[in-house]
Length: 195
Image 1 (cartoon, one colour):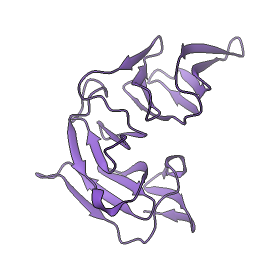
Image 2 (image 1 turned 180 degrees about the horizontal axis):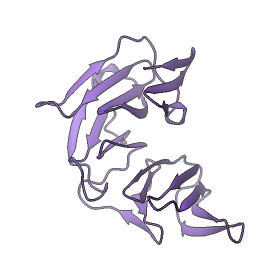
Image 3 (image 1 turned 180 degrees about the vertical axis):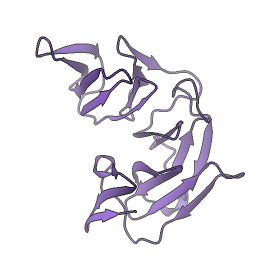
Image 4 (image 1 turned 120 degrees about the vertical axis):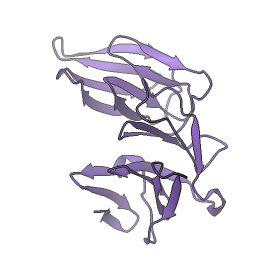
């Protein structure tokens, strides 16, 4: 898994998870530096950035974050070993927790960090579909499944979820891309748009 991001001061970072290790590319030396070892090999990571901290998960190992200096495992109450992460509108979202399929976890508004997902919303758990990713359009979070997409509004007095009028889903989290005021994604039938 490869992830490029920039901090608010313009510092560029290129990180990778490969085998059991997590790396960062050093532009000055043109070498990869090992930041952490001991992850389960062969798993893909999901990443998100919030307030200059990179958060990462592979759904199996402890949820972790990297602040530019050290990688820290998070195992306290409210942390989730989810498969997919999203930071949108000062809220963190996590889905794909083993044994809790279709439960969307999310943080409170504008948290100091994205380490604790204390809220939960069932995204039609009885439909039997596997979660395939997360996205957003403005304040609306999007939960992608194999054959459907749900929009989630946590800003409502009572958080809501609604299935979009679309007879498909996204093939994988990494195919979901925000492009200006649109979300594009790859399904089994081609590339689609949720403008």
